Length: 61
Image 1 (tube, helix red, strand yellow):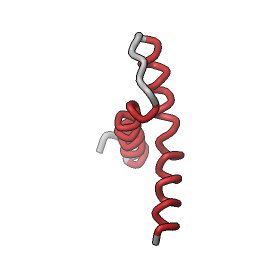
Image 2 (cartoon, one colour):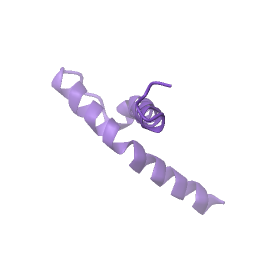
Image 3 (cartoon, one colour):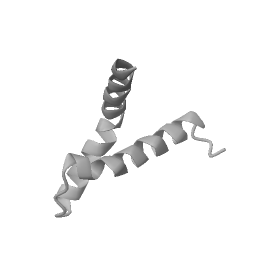
C-alpha cells in the first residue's frame, strides 16, 4: 500500500514537471521568484488543462 502510494506520487510529480517548470521560468522572467513547490499547484492546473484539451481532440467538445 505504501509502495503504491509512493509510486503514484513519483509518477504524479514527473507528469506535472514540464508545466510547473515552464511556469517557474515565466514567473521568474516577470520578476516573481517562486519556488518549485510554490508553482506546483499552477503546474497541476496547467497539466490537467493540457490533458483535457488533448483528450477532446482539440475540437472543443
